[in-house]
Length: 271
Ligand SMILES: [Zn+2]
Image (cartoon, rainbow, N blue to C red; front, side, top):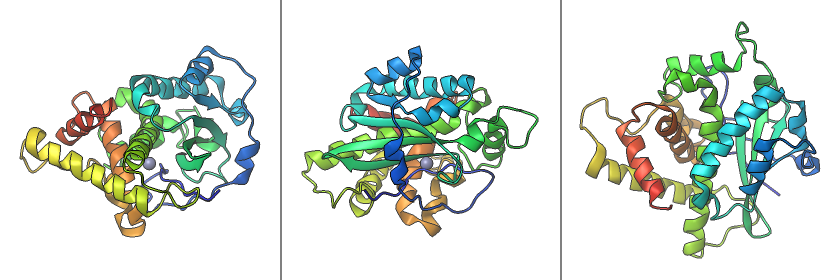
């Protein structure tokens, strides 16, 4: 089961992406036996919580799970397009080199997704530490590496960005299905999804130009440096990161950017 992660959020101003190698061991991460109300709610939306998350701080896990839930609920119709399986799991630093990742792949002819959170960041809730999750995000927002948001939402940034990948993956899946596009092997990543993601971006830009742009020089398509950063090193990541970053601005800013409003209109077309 090949696969490359599409979604990397990394510490500091990292100017490159990392190829993500699919790890067969994740197959052996069974569903958690812990039952909390948020896990139960997530399950109804076909998002399962794996036992690797048992290592996480309960409060952090609950907080992050609620972010996933709120977005999954809001975009429930879109999630139904593809994913019969979304697995929420927790991996150690060696496996996920950024803070979090979404890996889409094809399982039994359906889109499946894994949503990883990195142990080493999510477990640290000490705000006095430079590795504190909130501080890491804040630094990235302040530098323009991440999209502008209301800082009250700092702790929601990563999972909201990752859910952007989840939403887009499902839209890509629907577009491919409607057009009878045949995937090559089990890999969801590659030319086909890249082409569709590029078309999605162009459609949103079209809506932005027609309806939302205020035509000032500050009104830009690239919401953050991260959204365009993969252009140089990993061109195949660029439209995906653009979507996720714009999605984060849409969800978490008090006044989303015009391009994010155009994205909102685009997404609503699938609801
Ligand atoms: Zn990403």
